[in-house]
Length: 209
Image (cartoon, rainbow, N blue to C red; front, top):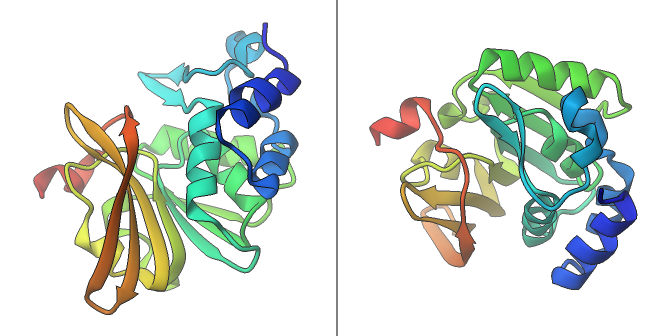
């Protein structure tokens, strides 16, 4: 059984996670609080875990890698598309000022709210809605992170980025790439592919693109 120390030292530090703020966030947020009772002994393992109805909590390394790639500042406002059980939002909340998180599956949105209520993560707002539309009334955002993979990045989300803001998303169907986009100007974006990944597909309106 892996311990939290194993998770930080072996899974993160030895695998290119060097950002001290990210490492502290991963240390501070207890993954055990976000997994089902029968999974708590596996909470610190370097793998996704089932949380019910074919949904999973991402492996710690991917959560840390994505947080590090965004390079968040403590004044940033972040949109997360795909709340899941709330774990990723909790980690992001340790790195940014405010997290707005959208979850398309109603029972998951409720579970995330319950999980977060048991903690002191009070800078996270969770909404049950289709993340394709983002959270327009709170836009623009300093960063947007998707935790489910659309066939292509929705234009609606790109338009909710600040100039200079970054959007990070797994993109693709059978083969997925983690893509980082930076908004340079109103209609100018820089795109970088970081690594191959495997996420659940983004459902709802994204599948019609």
